Image 1 (cartoon, rainbow, N blue to C red):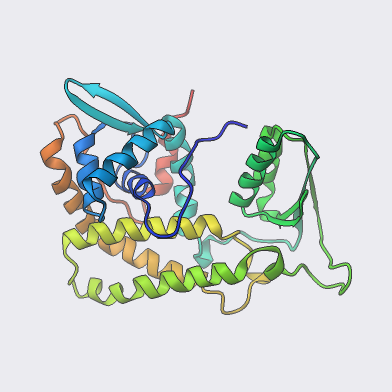
Image 2 (image 1 turned 30 degrees about the vertical axis):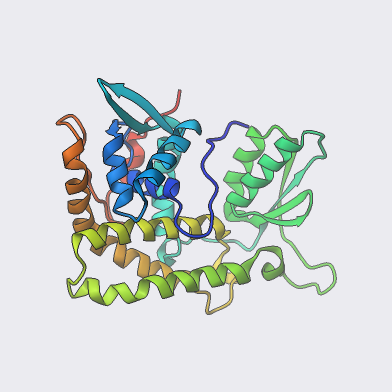
Length: 309
């Protein structure tokens, strides 16, 4: 199975992830090259040292996430087409994830994925990583489960997998109690709840200041980038279970309300500061940064994704 070698998520801001958030936020869908000095300046504004920024850029190049080109004596970088295609395709879902209006309807059934035994342990680990990323929970070493809303993703995964996979659709009943599946033991829901509560505690205090216009462009840029990176981590960890099988006080919707308001409110100031940061390092042919809001723009981007060859 061919995959983009994206950096693993770690606790706290990671310069590689911050740079991907910056490029995805202000140049989504673009493979236009940006000077390395501009990328360093953008990461510095998010709290990364110049040396740390250069290390992050070089690591992304080695992973083939960033492509390096030369323009005279200047190194320029752009996202690979595969990364752009995957990132832009997932933007509308990530940005609206957690909003009640974005939750797909669920019919109460589940998808089971059974994985055949194989001696290719690398392929098996890769498949497990993809299943977790798609929101599947592990019932046993070879059986994974997700709501039926994940059906299309499961079928695509099975078709592309190097390991034999069987996809089954149906109802699931606990063999002892006769009740429904216990989501708290199948997925790490206690940890995910804590992650959402940490997000709320970190970002809710900024809302009142943003409403009063007390956030500077410099602060708005750093806050928006770090918050988006934080949200992307939540989106990737949360299996996206339907509200019908979640506790009534599940904090995902509250966290999304905070994310959505701050993301949109901070956008114009963050774009202004982003343009200031890159201006000394760019040429007229460098596309200017542009902020998007959750309510507009992102869905339209999927119509102009550069397809990988």
